Length: 640
Image 1: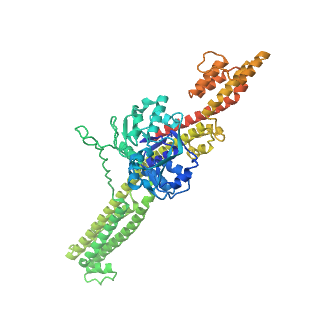
Image 2 (image 1 turned 90 degrees about the vertical axis):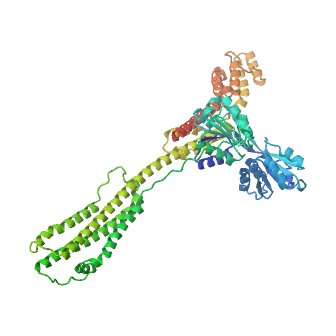
Image 3 (image 1 turned 120 degrees about the horizontal axis):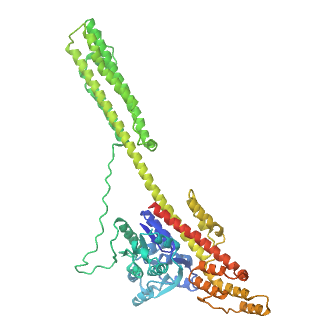
């Protein structure tokens, strides 16, 4: 799922990491800028006198750590995320209510006593619940200190706007009613309400979901518990089975009745894939080794039934002197030579073949990626040679028998038994060769399977890397947008693109267009709007200054006293154009204001030159940022 994160930058980064670990793609577009405030003079005394500190957000924990070095005071946190943040900042005594503000109130009532001292609530300027009012009936005194402020952006951040316009968002997350309300207002101002029909809203609570209830989301879901983990679980559930229609899920128990007796049953998890494995490299080797052992065991078991001279040959003893005539001795010698050569040759060849096969099977895992899986496998020369030797050995007794039987037409039963024994041994060797052929074929099939798997894995890894790269570019664009709107240098933020530029000409071009403004930054839109009245006053004075004494006097007076019309003033006079330019500035249309100022008479250039230079630098930086955000969304769509 492609998830839009609207939280302040630090919380957004932590949430993006958690989403990335679950396989989702985060798009960071903070709606607020977090600012820590200087604590009041009585804060230290109040902290020392309180029995515990109440924290209703992770930002409260960070603000407390900024305001004081004390880490031993008892901390009562609204949820696990806030508690984990406090523990990470060094606070040693932290207790989590694992819920919302009412849960925190109940935890305080259960664990603390009003007589032990007052409580201290660290919060931002705006709060979702007044803990002092909630705990007053129980006798607790709660002192609230505002130590941070989340300032709203003036317009929908560019990464969010670009991603929504490209329909590259699946889920939008809301962690507070204020964030939901600001998002609803910004989306309506940007005219993007229609693109939300393919987006699912996931909120941490029903209260956080209420401000966006009027937007045309595909579905609206409130987490079953007011925790970040519950929000992540809802996103995972959407990834498994998309929500059909619009529904609101809350953590309140269902009222009894025929229409709501049970909560909707979540879709069953997908069946686990059945993995079928081949014999593998080790299996092929074991098959070959077992075949060799079977041959050797068969030879040893049948050894007592061998003729005496063959047993002597197996044991390495010299053959006894012949006891029959010349023809029988020649036949025995011939058969003995054939048997000995067949047995010894087959044994040597089989041993060498097994050793060679073992080495090749051990190396196949390291070389499988380099072997072309689609090329037909060539016949193994060693196996072909061994097969030829056995076939020649099998034919040899048949060819030798007639020459030896010419002087002795009748062969006794002992010689027939010897020939039958040799024939069985040859058949056993042929079976061993067949087993080796099967093992080699299995090894080749396994190599092809491994090669295909490596190719598929490489493709999936490439998609994952592309998605991660696109998310990183979107994150950099969000940081650059904040720096440009704040009017501060953004060289460090721009340098984050350096490792992402390699091999990407488009990204390099966008980075180069922003580089001239990175070191010093550009004037913010708010600063340009604040400076414009003085520029307009000076331009009016320059426009009225000519060679006549009366006109120069009027120009001097107009330069000292601002007497000019404002609003949507019609006409082509300098005063009318300046009024329309100021109206465009108030509406956020800096480009139109610059165009109107450029259309002023030449005598006003001196008064407007400096302001125009700042405004055009701001517009150029915004154009580069818009190109970066659009390109990041394109990368995100390509990776999907």
